[in-house]
Image 1 (cartoon, one colour):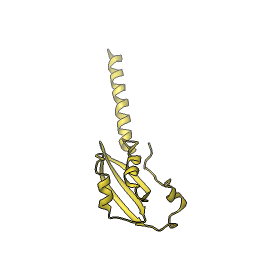
Image 2 (cartoon, rainbow, N blue to C red):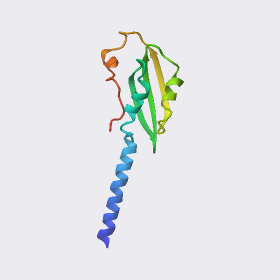
Image 3 (cartoon, one colour):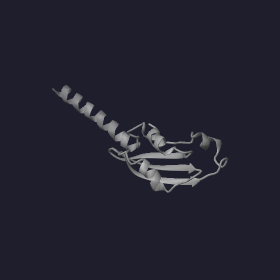
Amino acid sequence: MGLLAATVVAVWSWSLIRSAGAVLLDMSPDPTLPQKIADRLEQNGDRIFDLHLWRVGPGHVAGIVSLASAQPQVPSVYRKRLADLHSLSHVTIEVEAWQEGTLSAEQQAGVAVRIEPIS
């Protein structure tokens, strides 16, 4: 009987460690979220050059998105494109005007997108 109780406690403990570790390490609950954000925002030549996502609670993610655009719009236009992403609870959007040649090659290629932390 004691062995059964020890097994139940061990399984429960391991589950608790995994879930607490995910919260403490700010793991993104949806690994496809960065691509969903990019698909909605990178239109008409707009380019994401910096993206950070953090888990702020169960099922809630906050993000900071930096965009470069030859024809920048107000951040609320970009925020509306993300409205159907319900797990995205808080978003800060920074839009920078740019002319051809003012971004680094890495930023133009779109490979400067970072997600913190990567899980």
